[in-house]
Length: 415
Image 1 (tube, rainbow, N blue to C red):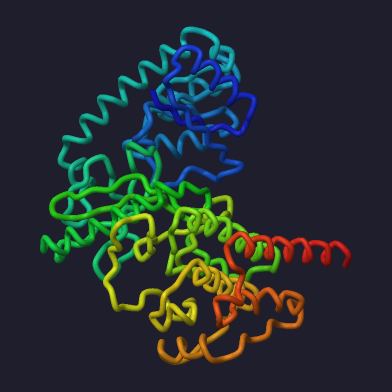
Image 2: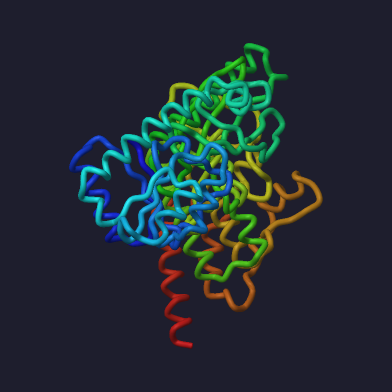
């Protein structure tokens, strides 16, 4: 049994969890606090759950909004007590059943859960085999079972990115599908190897500041990859709105933590940039897109030889010139991001990529604005032309950023 509990009262959540696991130790319960995590996404139907428990504190308005969604999981509305005035209205609105808080310790609690599970099981079976259900499991010309397509959210040179709901993950996910014009078996195998390498890398790193990847496969001659969905967008979006120095450094520290974990696993990102730093609902960053990463732990490297990979604005001088790179190249890229977060400008800009690459190697590191001049030595170290003059590893870079953060905090408190 798998349940979603929408409730802000932490004590009540603990009571329900304890009661459930005492009878059903294998049951899973996911707790969502709207006060902390915001409302349930409007596209979400909770199809991966057997029932949704909605606390009374969320009110009949939220119950009405959820039950109005066609295909939403059965909702058990929890009232203050079995005779509460909202009980009748809750059923009229569309609640599968109503449970008083005083009934959580009774047998009726489990009777309602079992009934909801049975109803949801029948609904899932009907949906999967219906024409509508089959059509909503189609992503372009690829049929991918267990995922409900919501909409296409991005298009790339060879693939499309969709917002979907995963029955297995019980969450909204981003699903990347290679388009059918790449049906050539070599292209399919090559793309799948890239996806597989990215999947293996992320599964091995397992760090909070790295994207979660849920699934991978081939369907109807399409390679596809399922990953965490970030409705808050990427770091570019936050930077355009403007970032204050301390939040900028907190973000940089989290990225450095992720680089520590990656480099410790023998992985270089090679395309670290704001567009590959996504933001979760709590504001914390997560690195994505390991398709161009170099994995020294694998026997082969999927990328083609003799080519320069990365984004010129964020490339280290050695990467831009196709020279051998190590962890200090990713550290350089992080330095560019730090500079841009503080100034809202890139350290080196030009009209074409080769001119930008030239500036990274030849031009001096630009000065930070006066309010941030105390951080100039850190920027100089991050953006040193010679890798030997940079921080030797992500740990040292993180420590420097943490010292800078404490300095800014102390300065702010003093003023």
